[in-house]
Image 1 (cartoon, rainbow, N blue to C red):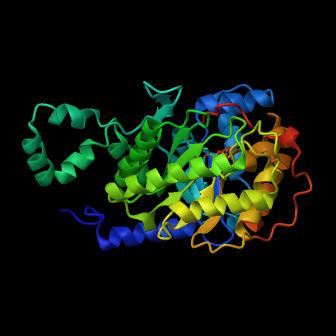
Image 2: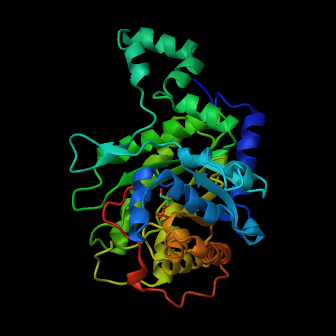
Image 3: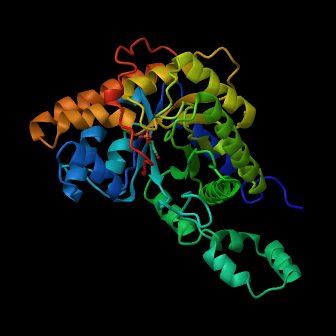
Length: 397
Ligand code: 13P
């Protein structure tokens, strides 16, 4: 019988917990700037900019060169692999620019979604398969396998980080990353999500978390339930509860140290095509209720994705969540991609002379969400203007 977090020392646990706490310290959330090259193609196309490495660098520089006003608003930035090794116009590494202002550097480690055979269009996430582990142990009988597992726990854990997740984490840590993100995707329809998709994606997130923690990297656990469909708020809440229950069962099975993790869930909102409109307070109540039923209080923070909501909607919902009159044992903040960047991208449009204005737009959203994660946001004038939504069906990141 093993014991909780068998591979982590007390010092490692302390480091993980402290890093998690710093990322979501009061008034702070996360900038998700980890769009893959493919996702950036879609973002840049919206503003008529070609998807070249240089344009992606220029765009990220607009965000990363924001002045000190963002220091109290942003606790962490999630990078994409390419961005982690890019520099500013003055040859300063982006990682250095971010770290020097006390902001934590994170890295997207998943390699996107792939079809899950035997389901109705569902997916699992690549980046941490057990390919080599399987090959290694396939020839052993079950008792032999158990004996091997008992005596080789550490090497198996390393081997199962396969298709290089363990090695990549070690390298990213050396290169300045202290947290990571892995995104799994679930869909709601009459038949979905299936039990298989729920279980498989929960397991992927738990394996990833365990590997990250062994390298001193705080895992952000992102089981995103897409807003595609016409389901109502109740169904969204029900599915969110089922998914999160499976996620935390898997975390327990994999001995993940919860205090050294952050959860990145969807807010509980009705499907995008649902005819019923719900108030921010209803969204907040559904979201906090779902979390209270499923997420252990030991989890250090919950940083919501924006999921294609407009910038205002996301801020207003986050504010309402923080004002929801239920006990909330976790820090509840943001880890927004589109809801922090949409106006900045529109202001930029690839023109040098717009760079300053674009940076200002990003700062404006960072400040709004800093207030919202403390329940102090009083803006929201454009709330409900769906024209501003950056929703895309079956959104891939
Ligand atoms: P959105 O806030 O645009 O949904 O993205 C957050 C994210 O990181 C998705 O993985």
